[in-house]
Length: 327
Image 1: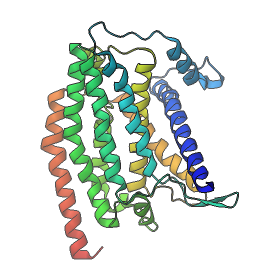
Image 2: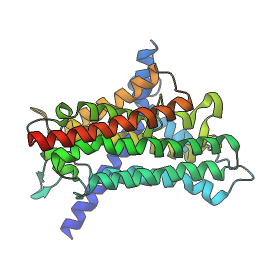
Image 3: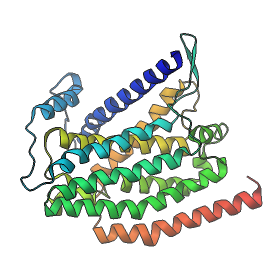
Image 4: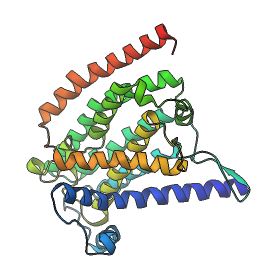
């Protein structure tokens, strides 16, 4: 019973922190945009606008939920949740610190050490797109449907390259467990041995999370807002909460695979992990504020004609280096 209680507390704490962090990423994004565009940014609700995410949440809770008359109502209502659940569940296998002792219990700072952890994350990220596709289809509206189809095609195009970009790290660490990958970086982070893999991963994770310059599923210039056009109130909020949760999860994967995870000198492991994740998130936001959106044909050409061949080449070169240099 005691062990079950500890696990339950860990689950509650991790998911609560993830949701709060996702909410405050919206505040951080507004601050980054303001910095880039020489504006003030949020400054009305609370000191430095720190209560703005709470105000936004309260506003969305009390807004009227509008459902199109010809929509498939059941699918329309459930689709945002189908996107959020995989986004939340992916964090379960990511280690965010070393083992600590609390009230006499040895606590592992992860929810589960799965020996196929990265495959678990890929499987859930693949499920998340169903929420977007079903939500856009159930709206019975042309612009959302086009956004959903774009999202599905984009996921297929870039997820293969995303997996290949991490294959070099898997070969070097000889494990699919994220805890094992962090342990393998006790002396040297894999960004040193896999610089090309790191660049490929960063590009792919932007496309996987529909972030600029790959935010074609949400392109307001031609799709009026994309897959979420017909959504309002908390249904709209759940979609974007899922997007920010996915950003945090992929940032955590990047920190784990290439930057040594929670490892670092002087500061507590959890602090190091948060610094690395927030650095990835800042990059997401800085890029959105400074980079124009690609055309859809450019997106697909880049994914299939450039990114995929380079990812395969990186995997082949890494395998050859391991074989010949006995890494």
